[in-house]
Amino acid sequence: MNPNQKTRLEDKSKVLYNQITHYFLKNHLSKIKPSGFAVFNALIYFAHKKKKDTWVSYTEICKLSGVGKTTIWKAIKKLEERKIIAVYREKGNTNLIQILTK
Image 1 (cartoon, rainbow, N blue to C red):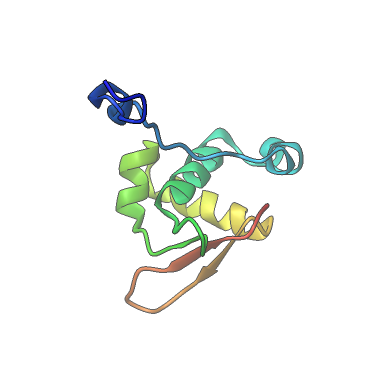
Image 2: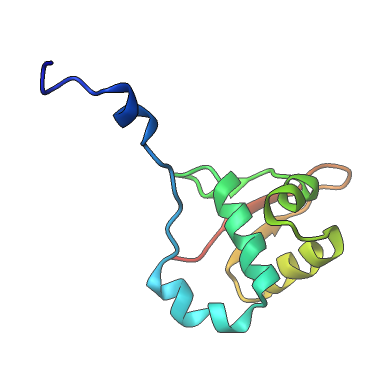
C-alpha cells in the first residue's frame, strides 16, 4: 500500500470539534450556568467557522443542547449581557447570532 494513501478507517476517524478558549473559560464560565454553557456550545456548533455567526432556531438549539426553549431564551440573554454573543433581531424571522468572544 502506498504510504500517502489513507485507509478508509483513517478517513472515518476525522473528528470535527469546537475549541473553547482559555480566555472564555477564565472570564465567562463561572458567570454563566451550565445551561448557558450548553447553549453557547450549540451556537458554536451551528456558527459559520470564519464569520462566527448563525441563523439557528431555538428548536435546533434545543435539540442539540437538551435545554428547553425558555432556558435557551434566558441563556442567550445572559450571553448577550456578558458580550459573549450579539443578537440581531428581526421581527418574524430567526435572529442572527454572532459569537463575539475570543
